[in-house]
Image (cartoon, rainbow, N blue to C red; front, side, top):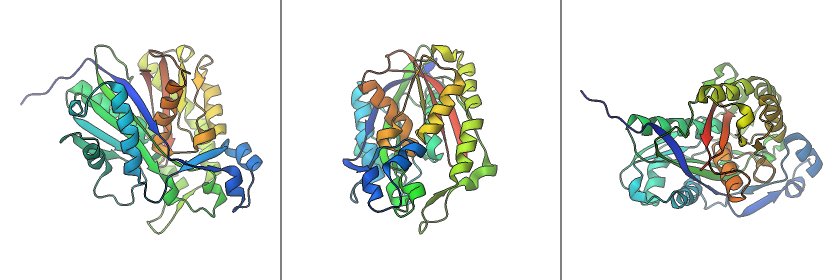
Length: 318
């Protein structure tokens, strides 16, 4: 028996993001719900969000983001030999998203699988991609986080309708002579799994907001610091902190606790809402497009959500 040997390290070659065209503002929601712009912004920090149309699926969103990341990477579809899609909002579990996304992008016969770690899904997929490249199981990997949460939200429930949105973000991961993706720090709190649930296809997404808020603001900053420790990175040297865009108050609370005073903190939630597994790559792709973070700088990623699952790693910004 032989084992394959891969590259010494793995790195992100490029990011890409995509949002649907329809903008839903807080005033739009206030017209149908017992809420208002001040109430929403003070509690979750969201001003507006994007919602996909009835004919636009999470597969469509993933193809758009994946295509942008692939184009920005300088690689062709023929160069990709593994596709990973992180999503928790498929209408049906079979067939999976990854094989369909690969086919739509012209990627021929890659390994293809989905990851469902909810809002932590992109970081889980990124860790799997990095390990595959370093182990020799893959050479170049497309990792996509794509969600159409609008089809799982009760639009008459102000506790969830004001938060969740649709979108996709993607990254291309390839080989590197030096580490460009640090070791992952991940885990789960299954004893709190009932805090975020979908009971069945006839049900909507439900969450215990205060339970999730307390957990996120007290339990997750040590995970982020552990990811820095494993990567040998001082938080003071980070160029960016990109946590899951769950709630602006959560984002800012964790940012204060990790001591990354020089880092640009992603606050994409204000205009994108909570897009679950899409939120981290979508936020970072927009930060790169706007020139807010330097190429070659270090970014700390932190995903967390239903399960309750979490994962964090340091990456070099492409």
